[in-house]
Image (cartoon, rainbow, N blue to C red; front, top):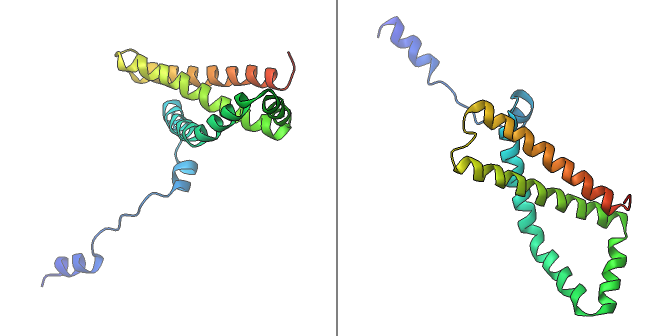
Amino acid sequence: MSEAVREATKKGRPEFRNIHITDITTKYKMPPSAIVSILHRVSGFGIFLMLPFLLYLLQESLRSEISYYHFGGIVDNVFTKIILLGLSWAYLHHFTAGVRHLFMDNHMALDKDAAQKTARWVLVISLALTVVVALKLFGVF
């Protein structure tokens, strides 16, 4: 065997490793469209998981006047308000990102700059609407 062949067999094959979640979150700077896409999936999953619980609460609150006031008392708890605020953010973000996707389905804002701009708008609008919901939920107005 020649020297080059022996050297090649010693090196072996190159080693490819899987990318871990910490590599993605610490080494890479994600563009706004990637952040919106990930949050769209997370918010949809959260809404999906909480939907049976929300429907149960709705059913119980509509059962009688007493149960309505009982659940009204539960909503006055700060912990419950924080959970409702999180669900409100999930719905508002999922809705605004869905509207963005509808525009993109109609071949609008598909180039890179426009996609990043609309992604930023989704983040701003969903957070602004969540702040309005928070102010209403915590009794500012």
